[in-house]
Amino acid sequence: MNSKEDAKRFVAGMCETEAEFMHALNIGLILESMGCSDELVMAGFLHESLRKPEYTKELLQARFGENVANIIASYDRIKAFTEENTLLLEAHCIESLEQEALKPVFRKLNNQGIPYPISDNLKLNSYLNLLNIQLAEPTISRNLKIQKTILKRFKATNNLTKPFMCEIIGTPKIGKTEMLFKLYQSFKTANCDVALMNNIYAPYKNCDVLYRIQKVMDMKPDVILFDQGLATLLIKNDMRKQSGIEKEAESRQIEDYYLALMANYVDYLAMIYVPFSKKDTFFGKQLSEEEATQIIAYNKALQEMFPKLEEHAKFSEEFDTDEKTFDQTQSALEMQTLSLVRHRIQKETISKYYH
Image 1 (cartoon, rainbow, N blue to C red):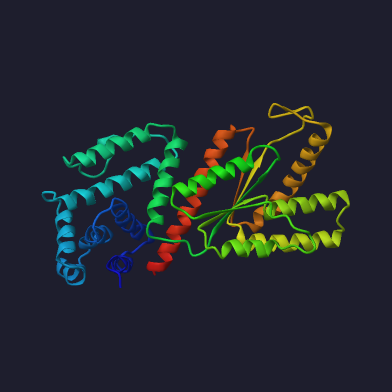
Image 2 (cartoon, rainbow, N blue to C red):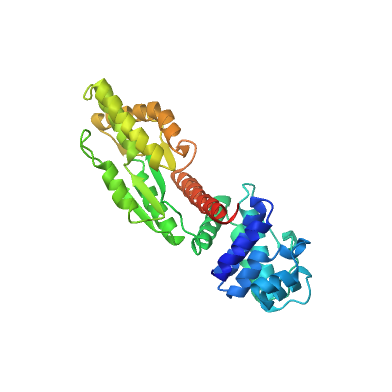
């Protein structure tokens, strides 16, 4: 067995709560992302073990070697810091800063705000100064950077067992495709394998939607982003029924089929909605009477269908762009999606090691 994997399983059996296990896991992953040795990474996973009476230095030494046991023992007693102990301390400081940064209330941290002692190590102090600069930026921008960093760290050693599927729906012509491409870049930045599916339209009675989804899933990406996907097909189907193009029985059969697919596949459904009643301009653009009528009809179907769509997606959220600017909506959507994927990776890591 890989020694780091052995350390994860060991600490999973030692921890009494999932929160305790996630803390130990995070410290080891932070050290791994810093390029530390396997022995130091193992010490990171195991660093709380000597605080429990039943786990002794001798036990750790017999299972993980003398170097790992010495790093944990000297760190636990907060003695004179070797390089290994300083890096272990730095990992603690980084995690503390990240947890503070993910809180919604803005608060700039300084060295006195770190609940761990600070060494004279120049590398550590430089890193803390850099993080404090990041924490001084607007809340959404700061959280977004840290979300990407955390996700990248988890991706270094953990994979999703199945793709995380995200679909964005909403009022036409407001930039949903642009948002999806920004999400695509965010996940690529966080070292995720991303697939972008767009316009999966197919003949309603002979559709190959399931085949196309399965074909993309067979590529085993971490994330699949839908542009004009399953929920959009449901809304279009509803509009066809309302206009009399589709018969009631046929429409219900199509709806049941796509709702079943959504329940199986869509993890996160985001609706970006613009209340629209005027027929002359839309986001500063002149609209023809036909365009305005189409947008109004789509918005009506969107509002009527969304409650049903919410029931069949694992997580859903509504963004009203009358309340937020386009950029704020994009940042909030990006942060929420990155966070949901990170939580999926965390849960799957817990289920793999923690019982």
